[in-house]
Length: 169
Image (cartoon, rainbow, N blue to C red):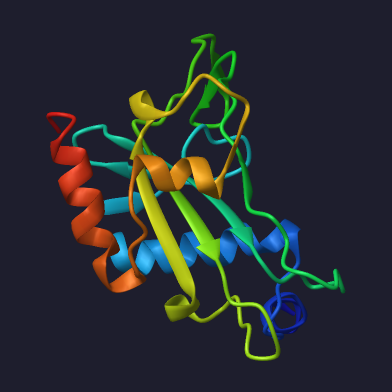
């Protein structure tokens, strides 16, 4: 049954928005583990955590969708501050702001017949400290590009390490 569901959900090159976040996080996990633990779950305030408590949030977008759009979709990422977060999925911590220390903006920029969301080499990653994000609810790729440069998956771990060290972590 699990294999059948996996095949239906992830067996095609273009993965629906609802599930594409799992693909992006899995790609990031391959790049960051074992230094970072993949900790996302329902209502999790962040997606990865390092043993020293540093937290990382993943946001993703793709130029090509699983439905026909006729043109590349604009990359927009939700970065709104929250009123708090769930600890271990059961205890609400009322702490306004962004609970992650780092954000990784994952953008699948390939558009056309060769687009495959499951291919790590087709993604670009932008690593930004939370404190560098403007006080807005949504960010476009143009703004993110003024804060940092894109790296391929092969350079992601180093980019995260360098960015994290700039925080003193």
